[in-house]
Length: 282
Image (cartoon, rainbow, N blue to C red; front, side, top):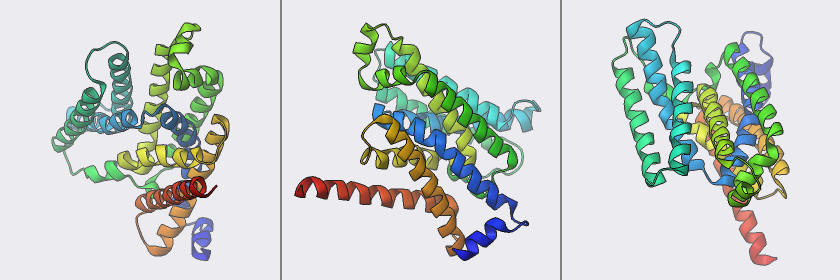
């Protein structure tokens, strides 16, 4: 741990401080949006959006490097595809007679396949694994600013529409009868989840963004009495997982992202086991 603290204060290792700060501030959207995702039980939809993002990343890279459209890069492609996936899933959920799980599976698979095809045709070598698993140690000052902007957007919109989001999550039919535009609120919730996923894929990768979106909120759900408390506890747990993961990975010379997720999963299993034991004996 002493070596970890020394690395954080080393002026020659600014990337380590960016990784720590980005991870801590990324915990805010992870905790807040993750709570809605867990309560509304739409983690499979968030997973579909996350994997569709690879299609947008591949499209952006191809248009930027192969076609020469300099203003359209991987980030722009990822945002476009993620928001498009959120709209499609909302329309299917509301109006289509098609099975929702079939459309989710199709979007998941087609998004990844399209992304890999675009990456294969992009000039130069691109490692798809870097997008699937990310690397928090490679975040830049620009990535940190992206996360701060996302924090402001998520906090602002959730504060403004908090009660309506709760209504959509817990009793959508009653909310509709009370005049709440549940369709628009559900679309806004999915778009916020999509933006959270896109901006944080740069930090932890496509696979791990789902884990950090759901595990801290699931842990918090076992020890919270209301949604606001669940959000706050989820943010604290997420930040704790990031700090512990960075420290352990630095000391053991392991990849940071997988260590963070393994720690989060172990804590979730411990909390779940403790809750079951408490229910059995008390």
